[in-house]
Image (cartoon, rainbow, N blue to C red; front, top):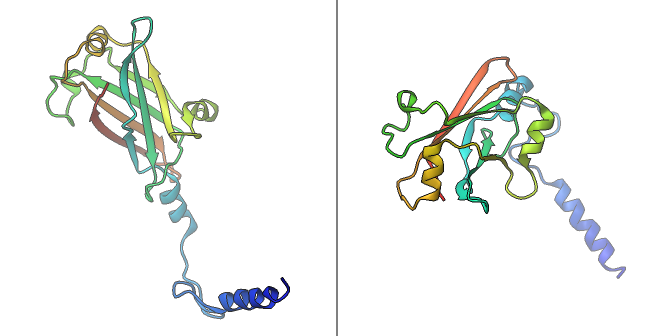
Length: 182
């Protein structure tokens, strides 16, 4: 066992002597990266995604539910958290023009979820398995409950829009749209 100690020490010493091409050598000036600019870009979400686990389902009592999983991603494509407000809107399957749907939006198919409170935000986030925010929507309009219970293959459109204030104090809105699955 003792002969391994000098070999191990030599290995660690050799590894410590190398230099990385991206790191400046001792005595060379380090490049200045403004911390505030980097932090504001890195910590704030740049995209919201509707996760493929999102689905519509029929409850054991016959009622309908939408289980929506959303992700906030930073500029490095890593999951992140943010305080803000999420608006979920479901449009009928016959809606055309997925990006421009304000005229066809039924009044009872929008849910606004307040994620500005840190405790509520943490309760809605699944950090153990999916690393997504999970929302169970049970107060569905009649047309949507009927679609959930039917075998119709034409899926409604789901839009998620997240509003938050960045570290720079400027309000931001990010959004995405997809079709619902069962």
